[in-house]
Length: 111
Image (cartoon, rainbow, N blue to C red):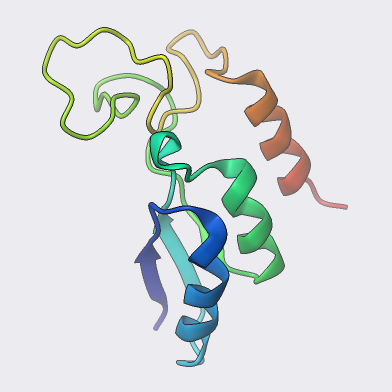
């Protein structure tokens, strides 16, 4: 068995959550964590997941059918938000934030 959890908050309490969950002695996977508007970002969370050897899955990748670039509760027909909620890439494959994509490449590269 594994333990899965969500974390849509600032990274300041992520370490303590992981410590508490590790007490169960099972592998951990954070199945959802990206919510830029809630200060939950790749740059804040991936270093902690990496340090604590915790798996992480991003909900939303390419902007499209599921509309996860919009924050929760956005009305239908809203204009594209200045700060995307989840997604990483535009439909044409260009990044929402190229600095963010470069960070992801660096932290996930095999060294």
